[in-house]
Image (spheres, rainbow, N blue to C red):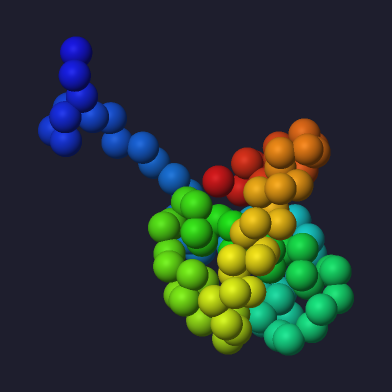
Amino acid sequence: MKLTYWTAPILKTKSLEKSIEEVCQHFNVELEKIKEHSRKRIYSDPRAIICYLLRTEHHWTWEKVGGFFNRDHATGLHHSNRVAGLMEVDKQYRELVNSFK
């Protein structure tokens, strides 16, 4: 059976707020701290995962992803590529990121 717009199953993803909240809770940081211009790993790792989720799960543009963190679009691109690369080689990291989807 060929799937069309009317017969295709609806794929449900978590809401944006729920995904971000889960990432913040897992890393035990506040969203305001993640949005700051800190390069500390405690803030950059959850920021990278959120960038990846915004792009892949919620289909945001790079400009919108960067704007969410008051940064340039290249920040979102860099973080998203970093997460995707780590997911390819690290099974535990892949499972962690997939748990937020």
